[in-house]
Image 1: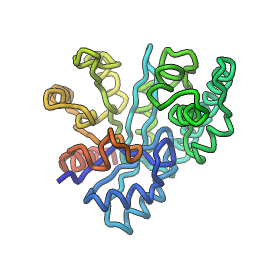
Image 2: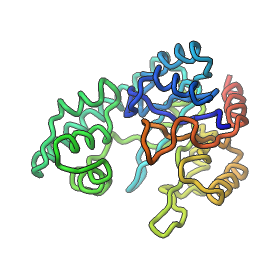
Image 3: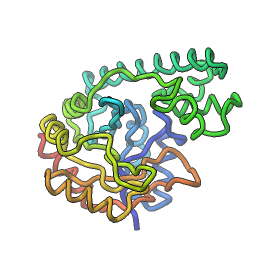
Length: 284
């Protein structure tokens, strides 16, 4: 039974469920430990913690910070963050403001390209949460410019596509330090992907960058993730052993979609939670 999911999104960023709905669904699916990790936001944490108490689910306050590397982006997850830390929250506000300006610029470019979307509609879709490209994609679908999210990214807003706009510059090292500032444990999210030939690839040179990130406080690596087969998991486990990192994992849940796993749909061992908690307790 899968009882742990350490990577989930809510309406505080680009998830489809409110924090309360997410926790209720986790409880229904017998998930015992759930991390709420919205993009550049802890806006769903307080509600999630309350819902966790109601439903008997341990909710770990978290975040997922989107960062830049040359010609790509890297996401850093943070666990056990203090969502009341004023310095931490002020920096997240700055990142979210950058997201809003990015969405405005994308809307302008799309309009000039003949695929107009209203920024007001993008914000309505975001429902007050951290604005992201999925919200722009939904606006494109609603306007009839594309048939689905994949086409929106491939044709318009994916990296190196004509309406792509760079986000506020923020490095993985800065993200690790920011999470540490809030008393949290940083973990590198979905560190590898598969190319069209099925070979394992990474947006990072892991061997060279991991020591730098570890120096900035990185303590985990997402090993268990949708689409990662046994070979990939073992490859990443070898890296965690080599660099003495905690093996984390989760579904990257955004909503109930037929092609993606539900909450708890990726096996993550309970020892991942124990090791994360030990790393967190070791900070104090």
